[in-house]
Length: 323
Image 1: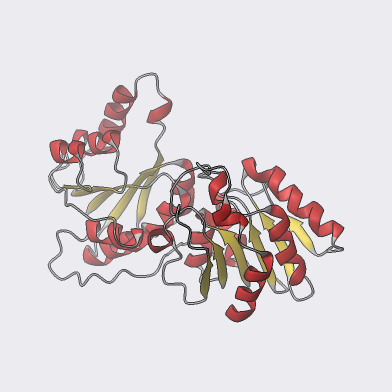
Image 2: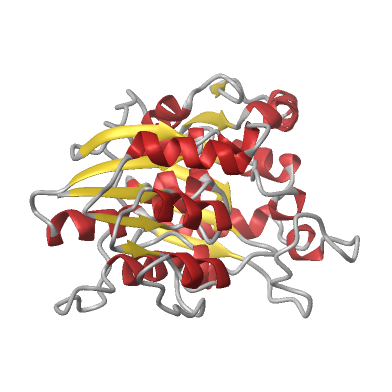
């Protein structure tokens, strides 16, 4: 059975879609998947053993996205089942143009117009559960239980206990705690753990700030990997960590997929919707604010109190209680 899956664009969202993909693979034992998605989502999920084809969707870069979507649909051909985890016009259109009869998408004006199965799924539950409900909408025996996150990339085995620090968050500055605070946390555990600083190409400067602070505090047992890893290497290294401290971000969900003990710092986002899924060794540090969750890329009030008010001492205490 050939199944087309349109993955979410963001790394974290794509990883949160993996339980739904696992449910599909169990419900359809003879399934083979074609994944279409952003570069980061494809790089993370293309190692699934049932993935027959993985295609990076670059239609957005084309002079005419409509024409590019049509060409991609013709390249893909027809499937037994197609599902999109994006709530976006061109993804609905892509499914329709493949001429696949059974197409699943969350209810929206464009999905209802173009596709066969468009359930209304409330956003009052974890995103993993929303994705799973969509994937299993045609199953009579789905009990609503979503499995754990799953990445088919083998984690690295470090010689010594390793603390991973991820100060970045691609969505925007409002989700980011402060480099000096992360470095204080790292320094507090540097006698027990080697430290790895993670970050994407746009977060190199932030990671350098953490490194500079660690040097000032006399910490030498660190490695700065910011901007130096591809998606597979990122997963390999995070998966090998003994402990992870992070903002609400894609790497946070990578850590959850490997059940790495994690303390996650939340500010403007909905922790009930995007917290680590089924990682028993995880804690959230957040402060309840009148203005949160605002879900903004930058603090609309200019004070950023949801993050600024969180101290390194709080995070250190949370780590100790986790351990």
